[in-house]
Length: 225
Ligand code: DC
Image 1 (tube, protein in one colour):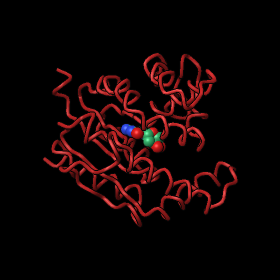
Image 2 (cartoon, protein in one colour):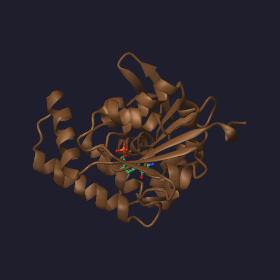
Image 3 (cartoon, protein in one colour):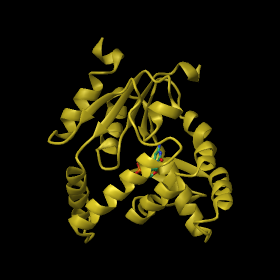
Image 4 (tube, protein in one colour):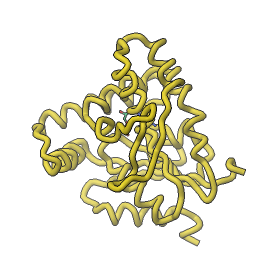
C-alpha cells in the first residue's frame, strides 16, 4: 500500500532552496514531508552529544542505527527531537551541517538511514527533500526534481538568512563553506550528489520561491491533470 503512495523527490545542493520549496509544495499538495538532511544532522548532533570521535566510523554507524529521531509540529514549525531532546536549533548550525556532510560520506551510515527514510512514504503522498532521494532512496518516484542555483546566489541567500537571525558571518566564508560542501557531497563514493537521469532540473537563480513552487507543482500529474 505504502509502496504505491506517490513520491515527489527534490534533490540538489545546499542553499538551492530545497527546504523552503519542499515544505511549501508538501503543504499545497497535502502530502507528507521528509527532510532527509535533518536525519544526517540528527546523527551528527547525537554523536557530538555522546562525545564520539568523528574518525571512529564504527561508533558513528552504531549511532546512526540507535539514535531516536522524531519530527513534531511546533509553534514555529517542525521541531526535531534527538533521543527525546529538542535539537531543532542545534540542527541548523553550520557546524552541524559540516558534520552531517562528513558523516553522510560513510556508506554504512547511509545504509542505516535508508529504511527509515522509506518509511515516510505514506498516502496520500510524500515530498522528499535531500541529495539522493531520486537516485537511491526512491528511484521509482513519480516526479523527480533537481534544484540548483549558482554558488554565489546560494551564499547570498544564506548570508541574508543568517543576518536576519543576527548571526555574523562573512559572505566569503559562507561561499568557501558552500563550495567545500558541494565538492564533498558530489565527490563521495556512495550516493554522490547528482541529478537522477529522469529528473527535471530547475535553476532557481533569479526566481522567487513562489515561482519555483509553481514550476514544481506543474510537474505533479494530479495537479497538472
Ligand atoms: O540538506 P542539509 O543541508 O540539511 O544536509 C546536511 C548534509 O547531509 C549535507 O551536506 C549532505 C548530507 N545529506 C546527504 O548526504 N543525503 C541526503 N539525502 C541529505 C543530506
